[in-house]
Length: 445
Image 1 (tube, helix red, strand yellow):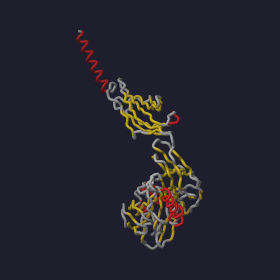
Image 2 (image 1 turned 90 degrees about the vertical axis):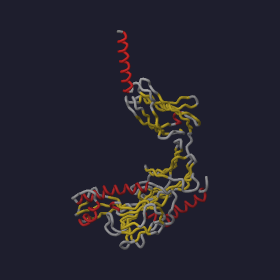
Image 3 (image 1 turned 45 degrees about the vertical axis):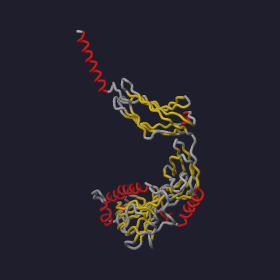
Image 4 (image 1 turned 30 degrees about the vertical axis):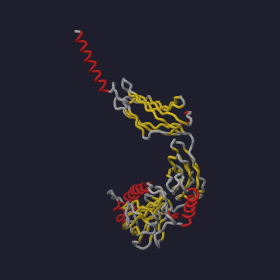
């Protein structure tokens, strides 16, 4: 009888143990920690990101702490993890000064515990350096005056430990680059000031070091507001049927709704692609020299940032307004189009309302756009020189007559081409300053 009871209890224990193991109540594996980047430095404001995982039975507790000079300094303690949760990501903002850290060596610990009956733990230990000193940022050249829709040039020098630099224009962030000069501590960039801002916004150069310490330097400048043109364009049935309808990828019978769809929705998609290409700066060193070329023997038909409303059969089409984000130049029919300056072709192809188009990168984040072409005489990746024939004007896309839509974009945002067509502006704003900095600071570190 006793043997049977013992056997029964043993069977129950085995079944219960098996069930507990299957359910993860009993588990022998440790939870895992995966870092996006293993931290080596901690500063006054350092973010670290990691993910914790436990497949069976799930997470229970996560702790982050730092030990320095025999002091245990808590950073994070999460005991409120939902039961059975297998994975959780964290971004921890470690504020070194507030935590009482001092410059020097320390250890960072990540402790993760699972929900099994055994309470499996995994503790990771990292040697870190606490650095609370902000990086050096010294502005060497910045714009004295800038217009809405204009371009500014910025050059500055930093200390060697910089991990990220750039310029904030209002709430917009743009990159600056350190391979422009031989001295890698010298950074520079062209940056745009949005055409749709009518008031002065702060412009701030910044540098962040590897420990997360940041230095900011406000740029003093004079803001000159340009009042751009507003116009009303009359639409005809002929234009809608011969130009608008063929561009649409939807069957829309109503001419007003058709135009709104093409001029708003398709325009947005086309411009998102243009912006995506021109945000991707691949060649940081300036290739351009002197003023940019205007289409030969041409006159301007449409201006930059012209805010256009559209009228059909005597009524304004509500919700179809659009900015004209370049300048239109017209010469003879099928006029040859030249590269405005030296550069590298980054795109050739059809861009919806812009028709057949070419985009050229000129360095420092500067790009030019050539649209409504009949054809392209270059291909992506070609290196072109100023004045080289790259295409022929036409009426492709949403163009009324044969002309060239010429745009200049800086780090993904349209700017006024008129500045780039001005020899004095290029010389005074860029070339003189570039040469001065190269002479004074452009040598080796």
